[in-house]
Image 1 (cartoon, rainbow, N blue to C red):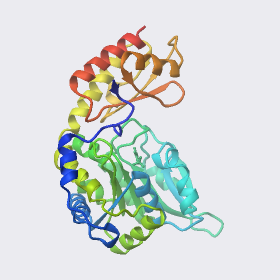
Image 2: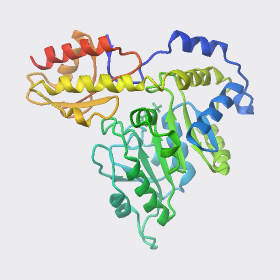
Image 3: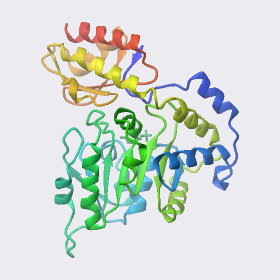
Length: 343
Ligand SMILES: *Cc1c(COP(=O)(O)O)cnc(C)c1O
């Protein structure tokens, strides 16, 4: 089976499992897990931040950030199809007590002018804007890369208003691999940012929340405990993350090439709507229009032929390339798409 549902379906390689088995561990709630400490230092250094905190999931990293920067009753500006909006079970409202202010983006990206217009005036009637969150690459936008210049201009807007910024960088490594920009060039514009080890990097679990302000780190550790994310001998997981950072960043470009190949092939199928130029990284979002099968039936038909993808609402589908999808599997998936969707 060629599983293109998500880059989260990867399984740890034998070499990664060996690194996990060898990991030196301790109780991380006491700060005594040397492997977790090494991972945190490694990631903080890589992104030019003072601190990084290991947490179980990207959702937790985002939610700690939202809680850190806001008070209940305030508002967070976020793109309307962001992970924080769609896939975090309303945690920003439920756990931080904030309201999300959705801004409709173009392939997930919002402009400095939109951010400026969304910031609330400081009058006594109006809800107060506490935070702006961006997502890079943007998942629902189709793995879209935020141009650094746009981020710089958004930062300039929020700085005039004294509003902090958080980056949901679950797939920031994909943006870094595609652009070859230094990690810190993105990170410098955010007060906090998260990265996932369990997406394209292929680790079984774990994210990091980074910041420069060490008083935020202390608060983040307490909130992580409150949210049930303080772990003990988590060096076993951190070792997988270190292995992934050392061995799996360089190869992300292969995933991007595979995604482009899929997109070019899909473009040739009459029932498919996609522009391969919109595929920046490893996510391929396309529409199937006027096919005799319904979207769920298309997913089933592809599955019967050996390819798994997700229907993501309406006529849209998502295919994601990753560590466990080779060039040969990509070619086979192309054949299956042509056969099933061209039928
Ligand atoms: C996957 C993802 C996350 C975090 O997901 P978890 O499953 O909680 O690790 C956050 N943001 C984006 C954009 C994602 O794609």
